[in-house]
Structure formats: C-alpha cells, structure tokens
Length: 103
Image (cartoon, rainbow, N blue to C red; front, side, top):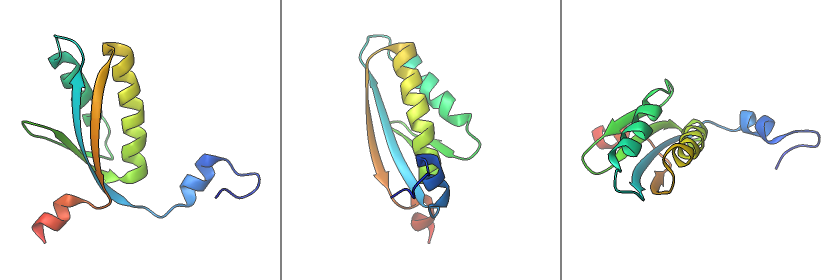
C-alpha cells in the first residue's frame, strides 16, 4: 500500500527485487502473422536488463519481475498499434527457471 503523498512508482522502488520467468506466445489475428511475431521478439531483445530465449513454439524472457512486466506492457501495446489484433498468452513463474534447471 502506498504511503501518503506517494505515487505508484515510489512504492515500486521500495519493493524487493523478484526474479521471474515468463513464457510468451503471440497469435496475430491476420494471415501475414510472421512480421508481428518477429517484430515483437526483436523489440524484446533491445532491452539490456532482460534475457530473451527463443524456441520453436514460444519465447521466454528472464529477469526482474517489474522490469519484465514493464517491457511487456510497452511492447504488447506497440504490437497492437503496429499490427492490429493479436492474442498474447503468458505463463509467469516467480523464479528464474534457468537457475533451477542447472542446480
């Protein structure tokens, strides 16, 4: 809960860092779907504070939860404006999966 005279960004700054893994699928609702997917992945790769891993079915991003969500909010919005309707599915886990798989 924010303190009096505090905005939402101030309360975000006080939060404890939390690592997360997010699995993303994008299903553009048009026939020429590859440009929307490629542009979305390319945009995510421009953020230095997140790690992006592509595979044949989904894209995964890893990093701080608040940073990941801020990046997704920006890039999903951008995708809607540039390419129109699409369905995004997200699976969010409170942990960096890459670390648990190798431990």
